[in-house]
Image (cartoon, rainbow, N blue to C red; front, side, top):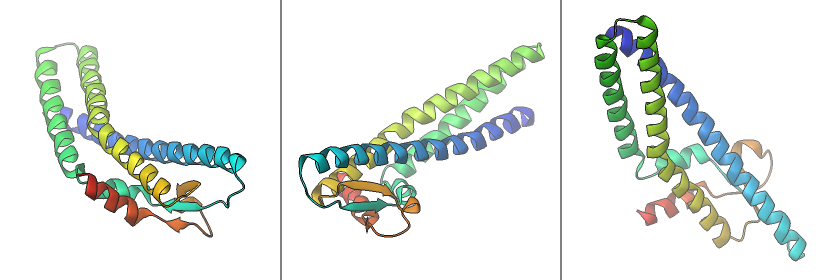
Length: 164
């Protein structure tokens, strides 16, 4: 059991690294979409550029459904660990045991993505809603803007709270 727990624990650590990467990609997508929208609206009119900044990690951490999602991921992790242990204990071949553990690891990652996807979509939509309401032409991660920009983090968190 300890052998498989260690392997799955590394998987959980990799999962959190993947979570960070997905969050970064999410923010990049938001920034890219906002930039493209701002570029097209700037061409359509001679209005001023209004920049918003958001601390997306804080937004995700404040999502009302995150606690349940984390609990679901933890339950899924325990389930996949038990499945890996049960299946691997029946298998005498070490290579096949490793294959079983890797398969369960992949199932866990896919399950986590499935569980977290609605949270990321909610956050992205909340950023869009706030940006539209505040007539922002660009929204960037707060960490990449050195000077300027309207911080909309709390507005986005409030938008998420209203939705739920």
